[in-house]
Amino acid sequence: MGRRGRQDLEGEEFFFITTTVVKFARVFTQDKYCDILLHNVTHYQKRYKFLVLGYVILPSHFHWIIQLDLKTGSISDIMRDIKKYTAWDVLQELEKDNRIELLNLFELEAQGRKQQQRKFWMERFDDEVIRNRQMFLTKLKYIHNNPVKAELVSRPEDYKYSSARNYVLGDQSTLHVSTVMAL
Image (cartoon, rainbow, N blue to C red; front, side, top):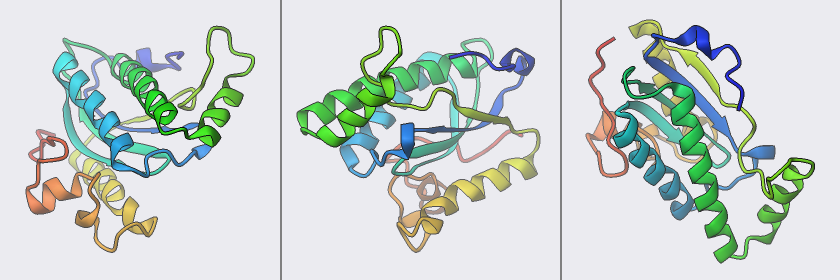
């Protein structure tokens, strides 16, 4: 994955990030697939020492806000590893579940790519530097309202894979989220 001007972001520590499954395939519709993503986030959170300030996993993509530890890794390092290992783990689970239609889609998306049999994620991820508290609150509200807008739940805190539960209910059981921000 190219850095696409990310060298200009050195020194920045707060990011709003979106990454999407190819063709907007609806993979994250079952707990086990969401849990794979969260397992990888937690694993790399320990390695790179970043804080999750907000997140939501939707059927075809996820959004999150993180605060980097500038000494341990860049946004590109974190996203490279999370995307790579989540793809491997989800594809393995899809094989076990015999989800042929999705596996065929991912094989088709990899055609013409050297040394790649399947392509799970879109090539890049979108990132935006969070520059102030107002921007943070705007992005957090957007994240939390996504499941309501998608008509998955009627209230943000009712969606299991959203930090709305952390903020509204104090529920840290799905993923630990730092609900006190130093911005």
